[in-house]
Image (cartoon, rainbow, N blue to C red; front, side):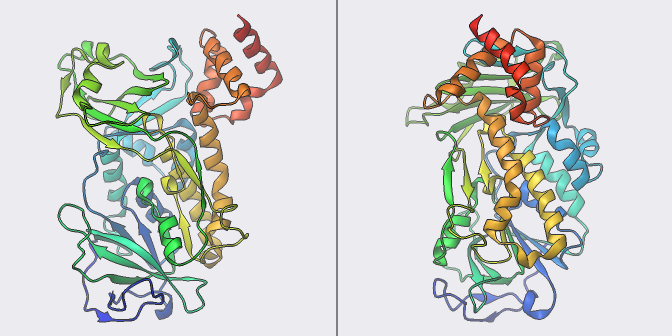
Amino acid sequence: MLLADPTAKVIRGATSKWPATARRRGLQGSGAGASTAVIVGGGPAGLLAALALEGRFERRIVIERGQPSCAAEAPALLFAGCMAPLEDLCPGLPAELVAAGAVPFDASGDFRWTQRGRTAGGYRTGIEVLAVSRRLLSQVLRRRLDGQPAVEFHRGSEVVGLDLDDCRDCIRGVFLRPLDSYGARNSGSDETWIGADLVVDAGGHRGQSPEWLRHLGLPMPEERVLGRQIAVTIQVFRWRRPEQAPSAALLVDAPGGSSALYPIEEGRWVAMVGARSGFDSRFDPGLAIEQGALAQSLRHGEALGAARSWRSVRPSRLDFGGGMGRAASGPAGFVALGASLAAFDPLFDPGFSVSVATALALRRHTGEDYRLLRPARWWRRAQPAIRRATRAAAIRDLDPAEGQGQRLLRRALAQAVRRPALGARVFRVWQLVDRPAGLLLPALYGSLLEAARG
């Protein structure tokens, strides 16, 4: 349900960083005996967090900006390795997504990956991927939350800071500021306070965890950069004649950027172009789609709207364990989830798989005692999923600064595309079914080296 606006009263904040005129919304926090979780972000990661906390808190409040994203039609790829965790977290959700229009395809048989002029794929592996727009994914997740009296949506606001208790050790609430109709901060409005026992930063690429901690004078997490910033162009297409539509999803990697073409619901396809060097003032989004690596595949397609561009964040991950100095650093009752912890290349993004894994971990650990959750401790529990996705994504990283061992492995993999058995192993790692270390098993690595010499 939509959060009502009860009578408010003026309180003084617990920190001088925020105005004393912040208005309290009468929502019960820890001080009033009712447990409240505030989830920052109304995208797929935030909705997964709200589902994961079902039965853990008496109230779950989702704070969302309420503005449609440029990436609403961008495909969310549900990797094969996240299907079982997703079924565990939300029973029946994969089948529900397929019924709503999500497109299942074989990770290799219905997919082609081109790198340095060599193309992998075209043989069946039995590893199934689901492709669905972020818009439809959010709609299906939201339907599961609609009608739950414990879930409330607060739209048209953004969180501008955290509030701590008098000992500055535990979360007590968050400060909000309303947004105008364009999604910009309304500087003339007072900030609002909402009490909370747990705050989950699920804001994705817009996650503000480091900034909130800095405002409180607390150590900030260390950001570990995984690649150069990527500027993305996206356009949706449809083919009037089904026989002219692409026969497989495409991913074309090049040193300066990548291109991708994925099916989504309603017979549509999404074309994406990512430029690692960014955009300048002369950049034409339409030409980037029409004259790029996807031009041949799109020649009979009908564009459904203009191409749109946005500057994605730099692929990176936050290190709360090493960057914050001490083992249990940060306030109790504050965690980050999904892309707020780790952001990846949006053209082949394992981010939703990371959101599923971290939401499932959140459910398990809040079943113990959510008051024990601190950023560093939570970071250690979320690391296995993030590390696995990071290593899998590194297979297609063409950064020239890569080490000699990584270059040798990639050269061998480029040759292995001619051998389906080796290529299938690569796709299994890519889809988070197998661990990346499986590529370095002695028997397999010997075959890779032999292929590289050939």
